[in-house]
Length: 102
Image 1 (cartoon, rainbow, N blue to C red):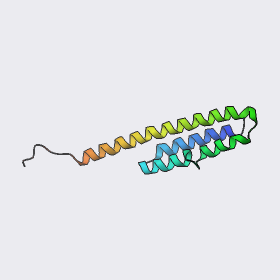
Image 2 (tube, rainbow, N blue to C red):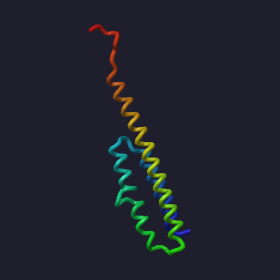
Image 3 (tube, one colour):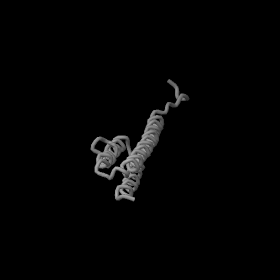
Image 4 (cartoon, rainbow, N blue to C red):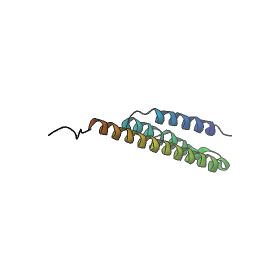
């Protein structure tokens, strides 16, 4: 095992924890950019693959891409949960009592 593999696991765990802790869409977007953006942690790891031994590049690249997909899926699930909660809050605020006259 290389040093990159444990770092990748820890990176994915941190990303998942931060995604789960995101309280609103703005915070979620910041977390997503920190890990998946152009200058994000996963992108930095992917850029470093070229420095690895040729026999390790394929395996580490596959693991990094799989982690990237899992992080992206977790962010998408959290986004839908936050959007659903926002819609439910909006509906709760906008209740209309149809039994009232007028």
